[in-house]
Image (cartoon, rainbow, N blue to C red; front, side):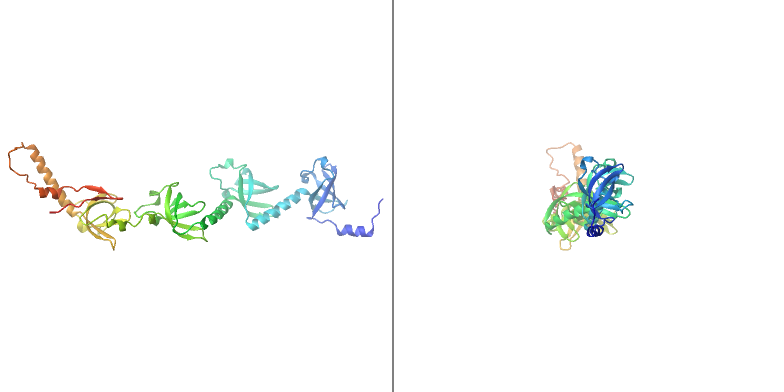
Length: 399
Protein backbone atom coordinates (compact mmCIF):
# COMPACT_ATOMS: atom_id res chain seq x y z
CA UNK A 1 0.00 0.00 0.00
CA UNK A 2 1.36 3.38 -0.97
CA UNK A 3 1.68 6.02 1.67
CA UNK A 4 0.80 9.70 1.27
CA UNK A 5 2.56 12.45 3.09
CA UNK A 6 0.81 15.23 4.98
CA UNK A 7 1.94 17.78 2.38
CA UNK A 8 0.53 15.69 -0.46
CA UNK A 9 -2.75 15.26 1.40
CA UNK A 10 -2.87 18.99 2.10
CA UNK A 11 -2.25 19.87 -1.54
CA UNK A 12 -4.85 17.36 -2.68
CA UNK A 13 -7.61 18.89 -0.59
CA UNK A 14 -6.54 22.38 -1.56
CA UNK A 15 -7.13 21.32 -5.16
CA UNK A 16 -10.52 19.84 -4.34
CA UNK A 17 -12.90 20.07 -7.29
CA UNK A 18 -16.12 22.08 -6.97
CA UNK A 19 -19.43 22.02 -8.75
CA UNK A 20 -19.58 23.99 -12.05
CA UNK A 21 -15.78 23.94 -12.33
CA UNK A 22 -14.00 22.82 -15.51
CA UNK A 23 -11.77 19.78 -15.15
CA UNK A 24 -9.56 17.52 -17.29
CA UNK A 25 -10.66 13.90 -17.43
CA UNK A 26 -9.34 10.56 -18.68
CA UNK A 27 -11.54 7.54 -19.42
CA UNK A 28 -10.55 4.60 -17.22
CA UNK A 29 -13.23 1.91 -17.29
CA UNK A 30 -16.50 1.48 -19.11
CA UNK A 31 -19.35 0.95 -16.65
CA UNK A 32 -22.91 -0.24 -17.13
CA UNK A 33 -24.38 3.28 -17.20
CA UNK A 34 -21.33 5.37 -18.04
CA UNK A 35 -17.59 5.60 -17.51
CA UNK A 36 -15.22 5.77 -14.59
CA UNK A 37 -12.80 8.65 -15.18
CA UNK A 38 -9.73 10.16 -13.63
CA UNK A 39 -10.16 13.86 -12.81
CA UNK A 40 -7.10 16.12 -12.84
CA UNK A 41 -4.88 13.09 -12.08
CA UNK A 42 -6.09 13.25 -8.48
CA UNK A 43 -9.74 12.25 -8.21
CA UNK A 44 -12.11 9.68 -9.53
CA UNK A 45 -15.38 10.58 -11.17
CA UNK A 46 -18.30 9.28 -13.16
CA UNK A 47 -19.49 10.35 -16.61
CA UNK A 48 -23.15 9.30 -17.21
CA UNK A 49 -23.74 7.55 -20.51
CA UNK A 50 -26.09 10.33 -21.70
CA UNK A 51 -23.33 12.91 -21.18
CA UNK A 52 -20.46 11.07 -22.86
CA UNK A 53 -20.69 12.68 -26.34
CA UNK A 54 -18.15 10.94 -28.61
CA UNK A 55 -16.27 9.05 -25.93
CA UNK A 56 -18.48 5.95 -25.84
CA UNK A 57 -16.04 3.85 -27.87
CA UNK A 58 -13.65 1.74 -25.77
CA UNK A 59 -10.87 2.68 -28.16
CA UNK A 60 -10.94 6.13 -26.55
CA UNK A 61 -9.85 4.81 -23.15
CA UNK A 62 -6.96 6.80 -21.63
CA UNK A 63 -7.78 9.76 -23.88
CA UNK A 64 -8.20 13.06 -22.08
CA UNK A 65 -11.07 15.54 -22.49
CA UNK A 66 -12.57 18.53 -20.75
CA UNK A 67 -15.74 18.27 -18.66
CA UNK A 68 -17.88 20.22 -16.20
CA UNK A 69 -18.45 19.07 -12.62
CA UNK A 70 -22.25 18.79 -12.29
CA UNK A 71 -22.52 17.26 -8.81
CA UNK A 72 -20.33 16.89 -5.74
CA UNK A 73 -18.62 13.73 -4.49
CA UNK A 74 -20.81 10.78 -3.54
CA UNK A 75 -20.19 8.37 -0.63
CA UNK A 76 -17.31 6.90 -2.60
CA UNK A 77 -15.76 10.34 -3.10
CA UNK A 78 -16.58 10.40 -6.81
CA UNK A 79 -17.95 13.52 -8.53
CA UNK A 80 -20.17 13.42 -11.60
CA UNK A 81 -18.70 15.22 -14.58
CA UNK A 82 -20.12 15.94 -18.04
CA UNK A 83 -18.43 16.93 -21.30
CA UNK A 84 -21.91 17.60 -22.67
CA UNK A 85 -22.67 20.10 -19.90
CA UNK A 86 -19.35 21.85 -20.57
CA UNK A 87 -20.21 22.18 -24.25
CA UNK A 88 -23.61 23.62 -23.36
CA UNK A 89 -22.02 26.05 -20.89
CA UNK A 90 -19.65 27.25 -23.62
CA UNK A 91 -22.60 27.65 -25.96
CA UNK A 92 -24.51 29.75 -23.40
CA UNK A 93 -21.45 31.96 -22.87
CA UNK A 94 -21.11 32.39 -26.63
CA UNK A 95 -24.79 33.31 -27.01
CA UNK A 96 -24.57 35.77 -24.11
CA UNK A 97 -21.68 37.48 -25.90
CA UNK A 98 -23.61 37.54 -29.19
CA UNK A 99 -26.60 39.15 -27.46
CA UNK A 100 -24.42 41.74 -25.72
CA UNK A 101 -22.73 42.68 -29.01
CA UNK A 102 -25.97 42.36 -31.06
CA UNK A 103 -24.01 40.06 -33.35
CA UNK A 104 -25.43 38.16 -36.31
CA UNK A 105 -24.73 34.43 -36.54
CA UNK A 106 -25.89 31.62 -38.81
CA UNK A 107 -28.19 28.75 -37.86
CA UNK A 108 -30.01 26.01 -39.75
CA UNK A 109 -33.71 25.47 -39.12
CA UNK A 110 -34.16 21.91 -37.79
CA UNK A 111 -37.91 21.60 -38.21
CA UNK A 112 -41.15 23.54 -38.37
CA UNK A 113 -43.21 23.44 -35.17
CA UNK A 114 -46.34 25.13 -33.93
CA UNK A 115 -45.86 28.90 -33.92
CA UNK A 116 -42.50 28.90 -35.68
CA UNK A 117 -39.38 26.78 -36.06
CA UNK A 118 -36.93 24.81 -33.90
CA UNK A 119 -33.18 25.41 -34.04
CA UNK A 120 -30.24 23.73 -32.27
CA UNK A 121 -27.05 25.65 -31.41
CA UNK A 122 -24.23 23.41 -30.15
CA UNK A 123 -26.82 21.13 -28.62
CA UNK A 124 -28.98 23.93 -27.18
CA UNK A 125 -32.58 24.08 -28.32
CA UNK A 126 -33.77 27.50 -29.50
CA UNK A 127 -37.14 28.74 -30.74
CA UNK A 128 -37.65 30.97 -33.76
CA UNK A 129 -41.20 32.44 -33.72
CA UNK A 130 -42.96 32.62 -37.05
CA UNK A 131 -43.46 36.38 -36.69
CA UNK A 132 -39.66 36.76 -36.61
CA UNK A 133 -39.05 34.74 -39.78
CA UNK A 134 -38.62 36.45 -43.15
CA UNK A 135 -38.13 33.98 -45.99
CA UNK A 136 -39.84 35.52 -49.04
CA UNK A 137 -40.75 33.03 -51.72
CA UNK A 138 -40.37 30.03 -49.37
CA UNK A 139 -43.52 28.44 -47.94
CA UNK A 140 -43.65 27.52 -44.25
CA UNK A 141 -43.53 23.79 -44.90
CA UNK A 142 -40.19 24.31 -46.67
CA UNK A 143 -38.47 26.28 -43.89
CA UNK A 144 -36.63 23.20 -42.59
CA UNK A 145 -32.91 22.99 -43.52
CA UNK A 146 -32.81 26.68 -44.51
CA UNK A 147 -29.62 28.40 -43.32
CA UNK A 148 -30.36 31.90 -42.07
CA UNK A 149 -28.80 34.77 -40.13
CA UNK A 150 -30.35 35.48 -36.72
CA UNK A 151 -30.04 37.70 -33.67
CA UNK A 152 -30.74 36.83 -30.02
CA UNK A 153 -34.16 38.17 -29.05
CA UNK A 154 -34.33 36.65 -25.54
CA UNK A 155 -31.81 34.66 -23.49
CA UNK A 156 -32.60 33.19 -20.06
CA UNK A 157 -30.01 30.72 -18.74
CA UNK A 158 -31.95 29.62 -15.65
CA UNK A 159 -35.08 28.97 -17.67
CA UNK A 160 -33.07 27.49 -20.53
CA UNK A 161 -34.90 29.87 -22.86
CA UNK A 162 -33.47 31.00 -26.20
CA UNK A 163 -35.59 33.06 -28.60
CA UNK A 164 -34.11 33.97 -31.98
CA UNK A 165 -35.08 36.68 -34.48
CA UNK A 166 -34.33 36.47 -38.18
CA UNK A 167 -36.37 39.53 -39.17
CA UNK A 168 -34.16 41.84 -37.06
CA UNK A 169 -31.07 40.20 -38.55
CA UNK A 170 -32.28 40.98 -42.07
CA UNK A 171 -33.00 44.58 -41.09
CA UNK A 172 -29.61 44.96 -39.41
CA UNK A 173 -27.80 43.61 -42.46
CA UNK A 174 -29.76 45.97 -44.65
CA UNK A 175 -28.88 48.89 -42.39
CA UNK A 176 -25.17 48.08 -42.58
CA UNK A 177 -25.38 48.00 -46.36
CA UNK A 178 -27.35 51.26 -46.40
CA UNK A 179 -24.67 52.98 -44.30
CA UNK A 180 -22.12 52.07 -46.96
CA UNK A 181 -24.34 53.14 -49.87
CA UNK A 182 -25.27 56.54 -48.43
CA UNK A 183 -21.60 57.50 -48.08
CA UNK A 184 -21.34 57.48 -51.87
CA UNK A 185 -24.38 59.71 -52.48
CA UNK A 186 -24.54 63.50 -52.67
CA UNK A 187 -27.33 66.02 -53.05
CA UNK A 188 -27.76 66.88 -56.73
CA UNK A 189 -26.78 63.41 -57.96
CA UNK A 190 -28.98 62.03 -60.76
CA UNK A 191 -29.65 58.32 -60.36
CA UNK A 192 -31.65 55.55 -61.99
CA UNK A 193 -33.54 53.35 -59.55
CA UNK A 194 -36.21 50.66 -59.58
CA UNK A 195 -39.54 51.24 -57.86
CA UNK A 196 -39.82 49.03 -54.75
CA UNK A 197 -43.24 49.95 -53.41
CA UNK A 198 -45.89 52.63 -53.82
CA UNK A 199 -47.65 54.46 -50.98
CA UNK A 200 -50.21 57.25 -50.79
CA UNK A 201 -47.50 59.77 -49.90
CA UNK A 202 -44.92 58.76 -52.50
CA UNK A 203 -42.79 56.06 -54.10
CA UNK A 204 -39.88 54.09 -52.59
CA UNK A 205 -36.99 53.25 -54.90
CA UNK A 206 -33.94 50.99 -54.55
CA UNK A 207 -30.64 52.88 -54.42
CA UNK A 208 -28.55 49.72 -54.32
CA UNK A 209 -29.30 48.60 -50.78
CA UNK A 210 -30.78 51.83 -49.49
CA UNK A 211 -34.42 52.83 -49.90
CA UNK A 212 -35.01 56.32 -51.25
CA UNK A 213 -38.32 58.18 -51.23
CA UNK A 214 -39.80 60.23 -54.05
CA UNK A 215 -42.56 62.27 -52.38
CA UNK A 216 -45.84 62.46 -54.26
CA UNK A 217 -45.27 66.18 -54.76
CA UNK A 218 -42.02 65.42 -56.63
CA UNK A 219 -43.38 62.81 -59.04
CA UNK A 220 -44.86 65.03 -61.73
CA UNK A 221 -45.68 68.62 -62.57
CA UNK A 222 -49.14 67.54 -63.60
CA UNK A 223 -52.02 66.54 -61.38
CA UNK A 224 -52.78 62.93 -60.52
CA UNK A 225 -54.98 61.07 -58.05
CA UNK A 226 -52.49 58.50 -56.68
CA UNK A 227 -48.79 57.73 -57.32
CA UNK A 228 -49.82 54.33 -58.71
CA UNK A 229 -51.42 56.21 -61.61
CA UNK A 230 -47.92 57.25 -62.72
CA UNK A 231 -45.56 54.40 -61.81
CA UNK A 232 -45.50 50.63 -61.29
CA UNK A 233 -43.44 48.41 -58.99
CA UNK A 234 -40.29 47.28 -60.82
CA UNK A 235 -40.27 50.25 -63.17
CA UNK A 236 -36.95 52.11 -63.47
CA UNK A 237 -37.08 55.87 -62.99
CA UNK A 238 -34.57 58.68 -63.34
CA UNK A 239 -34.52 61.17 -60.47
CA UNK A 240 -32.38 63.78 -58.71
CA UNK A 241 -31.37 63.55 -55.05
CA UNK A 242 -32.38 66.78 -53.32
CA UNK A 243 -32.04 65.88 -49.63
CA UNK A 244 -29.86 63.44 -47.66
CA UNK A 245 -30.20 62.72 -43.94
CA UNK A 246 -27.17 60.56 -43.23
CA UNK A 247 -27.82 59.81 -39.58
CA UNK A 248 -31.33 58.54 -40.21
CA UNK A 249 -30.34 56.96 -43.57
CA UNK A 250 -32.99 58.89 -45.48
CA UNK A 251 -32.73 60.05 -49.07
CA UNK A 252 -35.34 62.15 -50.88
CA UNK A 253 -35.48 62.32 -54.67
CA UNK A 254 -37.39 64.20 -57.33
CA UNK A 255 -38.48 63.29 -60.84
CA UNK A 256 -40.14 66.66 -61.29
CA UNK A 257 -36.86 68.58 -60.99
CA UNK A 258 -35.55 66.83 -64.11
CA UNK A 259 -38.56 67.85 -66.18
CA UNK A 260 -37.70 71.54 -66.20
CA UNK A 261 -40.06 74.41 -65.46
CA UNK A 262 -42.88 74.28 -68.05
CA UNK A 263 -43.66 77.96 -67.45
CA UNK A 264 -40.21 78.89 -68.68
CA UNK A 265 -40.91 77.08 -71.95
CA UNK A 266 -44.46 78.16 -72.56
CA UNK A 267 -43.56 81.78 -73.35
CA UNK A 268 -42.16 80.60 -76.68
CA UNK A 269 -44.98 78.13 -77.32
CA UNK A 270 -48.17 80.14 -77.06
CA UNK A 271 -49.49 83.63 -77.68
CA UNK A 272 -52.75 85.46 -77.15
CA UNK A 273 -55.30 84.47 -79.78
CA UNK A 274 -54.28 80.85 -80.18
CA UNK A 275 -56.68 77.97 -79.80
CA UNK A 276 -55.47 75.54 -77.13
CA UNK A 277 -56.62 72.04 -76.34
CA UNK A 278 -56.64 71.08 -72.67
CA UNK A 279 -58.24 68.84 -70.08
CA UNK A 280 -60.71 69.98 -67.42
CA UNK A 281 -59.09 68.98 -64.11
CA UNK A 282 -61.12 70.90 -61.55
CA UNK A 283 -64.10 73.15 -61.20
CA UNK A 284 -64.90 76.04 -58.90
CA UNK A 285 -67.92 78.33 -58.45
CA UNK A 286 -66.23 80.95 -60.63
CA UNK A 287 -65.04 78.71 -63.47
CA UNK A 288 -63.05 75.70 -64.67
CA UNK A 289 -59.35 74.86 -64.33
CA UNK A 290 -57.83 73.50 -67.51
CA UNK A 291 -54.53 71.57 -67.71
CA UNK A 292 -52.72 72.59 -70.91
CA UNK A 293 -49.61 70.51 -70.14
CA UNK A 294 -48.20 68.99 -66.94
CA UNK A 295 -47.56 71.90 -64.59
CA UNK A 296 -49.38 74.53 -66.66
CA UNK A 297 -52.99 75.26 -65.78
CA UNK A 298 -55.36 77.90 -67.09
CA UNK A 299 -58.66 79.34 -65.93
CA UNK A 300 -61.81 79.36 -68.01
CA UNK A 301 -63.90 81.90 -66.13
CA UNK A 302 -67.68 81.70 -66.08
CA UNK A 303 -67.82 85.08 -67.81
CA UNK A 304 -65.95 83.59 -70.80
CA UNK A 305 -68.47 80.82 -71.38
CA UNK A 306 -71.32 81.16 -73.87
CA UNK A 307 -74.71 81.56 -72.23
CA UNK A 308 -76.85 78.45 -72.50
CA UNK A 309 -73.98 76.11 -73.43
CA UNK A 310 -73.47 72.85 -71.63
CA UNK A 311 -70.77 73.18 -68.97
CA UNK A 312 -67.81 70.82 -69.64
CA UNK A 313 -67.27 68.13 -67.01
CA UNK A 314 -64.07 67.29 -65.13
CA UNK A 315 -62.02 64.88 -67.23
CA UNK A 316 -63.32 66.13 -70.58
CA UNK A 317 -61.10 67.65 -73.28
CA UNK A 318 -61.94 71.10 -74.58
CA UNK A 319 -60.69 73.64 -77.12
CA UNK A 320 -60.56 77.26 -75.95
CA UNK A 321 -58.93 80.50 -77.02
CA UNK A 322 -56.07 82.02 -75.05
CA UNK A 323 -57.11 85.57 -74.13
CA UNK A 324 -54.64 86.42 -71.39
CA UNK A 325 -51.23 85.22 -70.18
CA UNK A 326 -49.23 86.52 -67.20
CA UNK A 327 -45.93 84.63 -66.95
CA UNK A 328 -44.79 86.47 -63.84
CA UNK A 329 -47.85 85.42 -61.85
CA UNK A 330 -48.22 82.21 -63.83
CA UNK A 331 -51.78 82.82 -64.91
CA UNK A 332 -53.50 81.99 -68.18
CA UNK A 333 -57.04 82.97 -69.13
CA UNK A 334 -59.15 81.11 -71.68
CA UNK A 335 -62.43 81.83 -73.43
CA UNK A 336 -65.17 79.93 -75.24
CA UNK A 337 -66.89 82.98 -76.67
CA UNK A 338 -64.87 83.60 -79.80
CA UNK A 339 -64.82 79.94 -80.70
CA UNK A 340 -68.60 79.66 -80.64
CA UNK A 341 -68.96 82.71 -82.96
CA UNK A 342 -66.51 81.31 -85.50
CA UNK A 343 -68.19 77.91 -85.40
CA UNK A 344 -71.57 79.51 -86.14
CA UNK A 345 -70.21 81.36 -89.23
CA UNK A 346 -68.55 78.15 -90.43
CA UNK A 347 -71.80 76.24 -90.09
CA UNK A 348 -73.73 78.89 -92.12
CA UNK A 349 -71.16 78.69 -94.89
CA UNK A 350 -71.41 74.92 -95.00
CA UNK A 351 -75.17 75.08 -95.36
CA UNK A 352 -74.91 77.56 -98.29
CA UNK A 353 -72.33 75.38 -100.04
CA UNK A 354 -74.59 72.35 -99.69
CA UNK A 355 -77.46 74.33 -101.27
CA UNK A 356 -75.19 75.45 -104.17
CA UNK A 357 -74.15 71.84 -104.76
CA UNK A 358 -77.77 70.88 -105.29
CA UNK A 359 -78.36 73.69 -107.91
CA UNK A 360 -77.18 73.30 -111.59
CA UNK A 361 -73.99 75.26 -112.23
CA UNK A 362 -73.90 77.94 -115.00
CA UNK A 363 -70.33 78.47 -116.22
CA UNK A 364 -71.25 81.80 -117.71
CA UNK A 365 -72.77 83.14 -114.61
CA UNK A 366 -71.00 86.13 -113.09
CA UNK A 367 -72.75 85.73 -109.68
CA UNK A 368 -70.44 85.51 -106.74
CA UNK A 369 -70.81 83.22 -103.76
CA UNK A 370 -72.55 84.83 -100.80
CA UNK A 371 -69.43 83.88 -98.78
CA UNK A 372 -66.57 86.25 -99.58
CA UNK A 373 -62.92 85.31 -99.51
CA UNK A 374 -62.46 87.36 -96.38
CA UNK A 375 -65.31 85.51 -94.67
CA UNK A 376 -63.81 82.23 -95.79
CA UNK A 377 -60.46 83.15 -94.27
CA UNK A 378 -62.16 84.16 -91.05
CA UNK A 379 -64.08 80.95 -90.52
CA UNK A 380 -61.69 78.19 -91.66
CA UNK A 381 -60.40 76.06 -88.79
CA UNK A 382 -56.79 76.69 -88.04
CA UNK A 383 -54.16 74.04 -88.68
CA UNK A 384 -53.11 72.11 -85.60
CA UNK A 385 -49.63 71.12 -84.49
CA UNK A 386 -48.43 69.35 -81.34
CA UNK A 387 -46.00 70.65 -78.75
CA UNK A 388 -44.52 68.66 -75.87
CA UNK A 389 -47.66 67.52 -74.08
CA UNK A 390 -50.51 69.51 -75.51
CA UNK A 391 -51.79 70.73 -78.87
CA UNK A 392 -51.81 74.33 -80.03
CA UNK A 393 -53.96 75.55 -82.89
CA UNK A 394 -52.60 78.37 -84.98
CA UNK A 395 -54.20 81.74 -84.43
CA UNK A 396 -57.02 82.64 -86.80
CA UNK A 397 -56.38 85.84 -88.65
CA UNK A 398 -59.12 88.33 -87.99
CA UNK A 399 -59.71 90.85 -90.83
